[in-house]
Length: 115
Image (cartoon, rainbow, N blue to C red; front, side):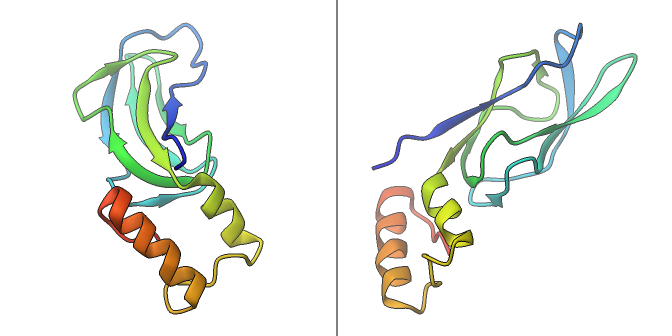
């Protein structure tokens, strides 16, 4: 089984302990690389934090009102390889036999569909 990937706050300059003002994803959401996950706001700037990987959100590690800095873990993603393969045509959806098999494994391991 694939290990979850920790998505962390990238280099955001000299900002430390920045407030999370909006969480743009929830567990079970599919995200693409560079898709915005959070909105942060300091006294000088508002910025969106993108995902470093594609995948499915397994767990949120931050919520509105939290303070984060560079390196803070914000979400855990799973099934990154599967998501990458779907763009190459190797994943055929939950109606195709391979899709059904993958979804059974996803449901067993994570408790939700990955389609």
